[in-house]
Length: 245
Image (cartoon, rainbow, N blue to C red; front, side, top):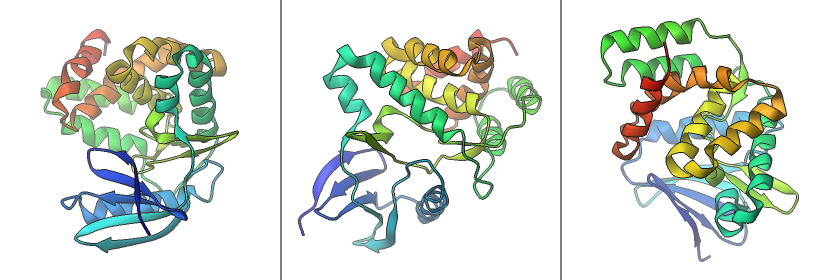
């Protein structure tokens, strides 16, 4: 059966046929990361988080693949680009989905604090800055909410009144505002004209102060530096400088 390319990313490509969706990873993608994503997704499947349903994990032509039940619809990213006049509606939709995810708990997946600590320690920033950020992280509220870890408009597929949330490989249990900070950073880098609209929507919907979310920015931005994406570095570094720690 012929596969139709649906999306192409840095580490994988997404294909559909008439019955299934396939996430096919690059040849050099680490096996353990494939199984980590499959494991986390399988645990989130049990929750009310609209995760895709895994059918199987296998290797073909030296490439690992996660096979899902068919995922239909259009990405929120595509909807925003094609219908910018509806941006407030789409941003509110994203925040509604994200806050709904945060109502879940999943003790089987990694802890957000440990992931952030690892990112900070391997960020390459000077030891004094790392120490301050680790102290700041250690003193933050200890929450255990389900956090997606990379909830961008690319990872939300809309189909009528239904939706599916993709790419759970960065998911963790932790603080919802840190998860919001990660999405805000994505907007600042990729769709800066909508970043404040997104943050305003979250704060208005949840009664959270901007100041509280902003306190997470230097922590999350530093952990993101560890990913070593050169095009992001200047923006991430500016977020660390702006905040007092």
